[in-house]
Length: 88
Image (cartoon, rainbow, N blue to C red):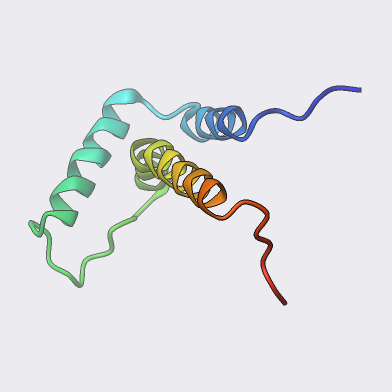
């Protein structure tokens, strides 16, 4: 039986699949436009994620850092309160 892939590897594989077939230049332009949107250079009524390229670029740009931040926070929480389990 194969061991399950670690979450980080699963994330990398999912991102690779999402980016498959997307020209790097298109992804790069989408990232630059998204950064400009978040820095206030785009009207607030304009859609931020307009197409597949935008979604892929956003995921590739933000998801790895978000994943690591959440993993780190949960690890620190587990160390701070060993044995804690959520109540129902």
